[in-house]
Image 1 (cartoon, rainbow, N blue to C red):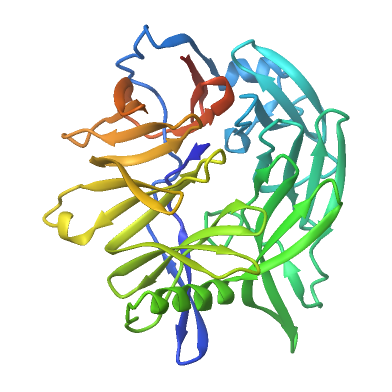
Image 2 (spheres, rainbow, N blue to C red):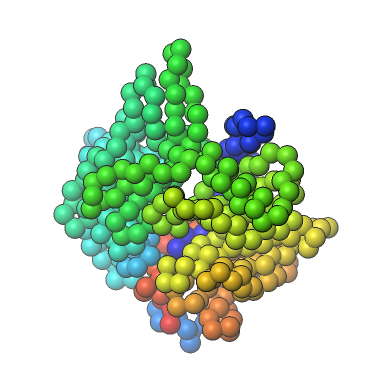
Amino acid sequence: MLLIIKISSLIILYYIKGEFYVKIRLRTLIFLVFLSLCFSGFSDAKVVSKGKVSKGQLSKTFGDALLNMNFLRISSESGDVFMLTRDSKSRTRDLGWVLYNPVNNKVIKKGLCPFKFENKQVAVSPNAKYAAAFSRHPASLYILNIETGEWKNVYDNPPSDKSGLSIFELLGGSSTQDSPLVFVDDDTVASIFHDMKYAEGEKTTVDLVSVFYKISEGKLYKSLSYKAFIEGGEKAVIASGVHLEGGSSLSGVDFLGFKSFIYVLKSGEKSFLIKAEEGREFKLIDSIAGDIEYLGNRTEDGAIVYNCIPTSQNKDNNYYRELKAYVNGKILTISSGRIFGALVSCYNRYILVNLSDSGRRYVIDLLKDGKTENLTSISKFMIFHLGDKKNILYLTDDREVQWFVFE
């Protein structure tokens, strides 16, 4: 699992009087969350082992490789780290990859990439058997079999003078227009491509479309578009008896599984959490006057976990969140207060990130069986990853990787 707070430009699709309009809104951003750790320390009674490795130490372990820590991904089941590297000794700075276990300080597998220029998106499967990456010049989707070290080019963008689905990456900045890249299971990688139309010498985005690549089948599946998400979400809201005021919008879509989605539809001051599956009715999960932030889902029971930010409770600089889970048709309130975010674990556990009363620290708690146990607190933003099956919590930034193996 991965918790990232980022600054981005926002792409919004509005539906007004039967027409769709695309609007780009820039948002100020504090990118990447977490590190440099001013730790108060994990509880020794709960931590089996802990450690850290700097970017420089990683570079030496990988043969004096050049590293971009933004290309670091964690396998949720194995807890291994997958990274892209560049050879500092070769004239061409060859692009490579490595699968590494920081706890054992062991390089498990490594090799070279068949492409020279990478985009911003890399993913690793939960069981660490596959990885995926976007290349550029040309823009393509590649799948890596980590065991054999073989890469396969599975999709190329259409030529510049042709219409079709395209991988999109805004280089030099972060944008929710960018095509994401994520494994939804051990065999399936998902993304959002731009449906682009070529006419009169120009290419324009007509819509955004979800896609899934099944590795075992060697097949790319086209699924629901943003237009379908908005229309289906509106029907689900209206069916619940709620009147929509003005146009509806959504800023992004998250994946629950193969052709299964979760997203937030906005209309006026209200937010609606919508679950969608291709070929089935759209389902309204929850709605509030305020904002909803999807945080993650648990595969063992299908729990959908999210933060509610009610407008009524967040006036005059107040900071209040309600952490909820939708399980088996019921909405459960897991916790409430100054909840910054959460990582969703199996076995009915959650790792909560709470904002301290002073607003200067992030308090990390393990919530299990209704009991909360403090793990640590940090004073600076980092990225949190969870090697769920191995009970490993990672905290990373562009300088180092820290890990904590807990009970």
